[in-house]
Picture 1 (cartoon, helix red, strand yellow):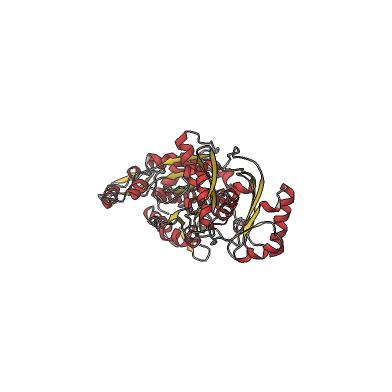
Picture 2 (picture 1 turned 90 degrees about the vertical axis):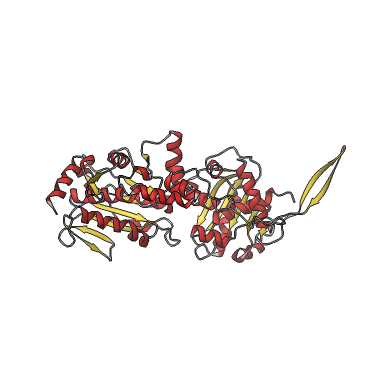
Length: 477
């Protein structure tokens, strides 16, 4: 390793980050960490901080920042173990790894002499025993609790584009940091997450607390824009994006606007989705159970227990045998005193066999005709009922619009049990996939297909289906 780089490592150990140059401009002048990047690193040094969120737009120095800290942790201290994760390992290699190797070359860290890359382990191994491991953070139906990270020990790490990863993956990876080397060197066991504006967990975990001025001591957000990038070539990129005229891209990638609206077909506003969690004042009344059935494959078996419009808790199984499904539903009915007439289950596919055992329960067939509602009409002093023809494509669509109506009006609450907290990010993502379809059709109302939802989510919308089915009891039939 070059003497100049050893001098930079000494500055790094003394935490004089502002004196370390990070690149050269086209005219050869050195440029340094931006004030926003320095702020993020200072947060990472704070022993009270567990998570640091950085970004909010493209070209704000996100990848360089995470690579910089990983490299200098490893070069400055012996035996440090870093991880860098992203939902898809191939995309991590195609982006972060390229920046990593460019930085190593820039600082004069030589391949073979100072480090090697192990392609089988996807790990950069330094001569001093330090390492940077590249890992995927995608959800696997066969590993819903991310147990594959068990046994790993890291000093600290980073999640690239963390909005793509589920919150449980991030929390699990954080639990693997903070081993003996941290205490020895005084390195804080922190995870840095970088991302662009998104409506998922990063909005709830970082943007909203920051915007509302209620950040917790263990989680800090540093909003950064392209204008914060010290690279002098960034101005040309900003101009090129603005020139496209794409308003959504400009709001997200240039302005870093987390409150952008990108889809007018969304049926439940994002703030209304967030407001459901922890809301305990929904109308109570009769107890209900709604069950989305899955016996195998990638789908989850999800059962929700309701008190009126309050979702009390969920039972989730990655895979269930048929008799186990029936026993779970019956046990929950006994525990919460739910009459069988207030149980609804997915009657399509594998759920159809339950009909013989739950004769008094509602067998929900997604594609069946909508329920014809009874509507009271006033004529002078008299009241009469008339039947109103539904304008929904099918029963599932009718119940989906009912769910959207009640949720948008703040009438549905979700109790934050341990299980619901565990799946909160996934539930929110699925609720965001409730979207209108065929909006130009003047005769019928539609929602996007389950296949399209699966494509967008990369998994089945099992929680959403469970909530949609519950709405059959709210229809006036």
